[in-house]
Length: 425
Image (tube, rainbow, N blue to C red):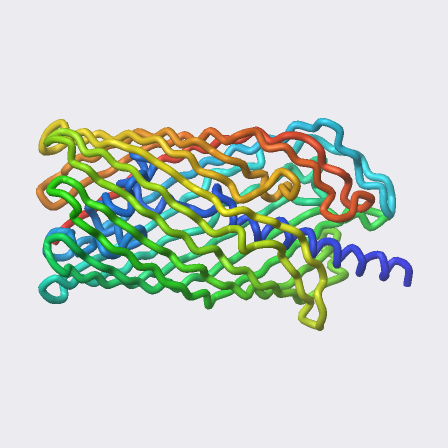
């Protein structure tokens, strides 16, 4: 009976810890993916709300779709996002309850290489009206530590996948004004693992959950404010998820405890304003500012399907701002080069930072280009490096005896490679 009680207590700690750090991972700047096309990667997505000249504009501002050339447009792209996140210990303590455990190593590189695909289609349906649809991955990425690392009782694997389908419509009022609207259907799949100290051994908690019914909307407007200047504004609504899943704890090949769990998560809304200015026939300048309303996320409460809350973990996210500037230089009718700089805030504060979410503010530097394969086909490509500010952590997952105290600093960076093909029929 004593062994059973320990295992059930361990299950509760595992479910609480894995969800509290893991699901919120999708809320970090580094996991809320702006990389929804390669045509904007070279400019650090500065001015994305006003600038894209292909069907990928459906994601950033559906109103801009009305300014695409007549006919049908298709765009398909892939971004490869390589996250580096390395922990350095500066005084961590080991798990001691119900039995003392070895401290462990620093976990290696918790980052991973993740593909982020997208495809978009737009077409005319009437004079001044266009419709389109986009399929993209708005949240995602993966972190995974060495199974024997210092913080294994707080996090080992965190894997989030989302899929977004975005039908949209745009209307061109006149040569100076356009409006657009889109619906968003999203699904999310998540898996989180961490070690559990059950006394006689260390065992593994594996939590899987999903929601296939998230709905939201996005809208936008475009204004020709001067002969060579366009202004774009856009808004993406929050999307509420109700994740349901199962937590299992087991030694290899011998599961002994499980529970059905659920939680409600509301992704924040975001708004952006952008300017595109044609300086001369060879140069176009871009700038934008975006705000994301993370501050509405104060905590994450986990519930047992059998009834009652299991845990409530403080998150205390803050609202974030992103600002970017960029430029496009047109060499000739076939070749253009791109460059960009952006500053992107994290919603995570130093007190509540977790091993699953070792995020901090970052600086973007990007370069890229476009090659016109023909009068109807273009190839875009880009590269960005993100410098992430060192992130301190002092965390015990709510129970220092069971989980240990993780004390140290994360050093991180991100490299992004992207390519995209667009064609007009």
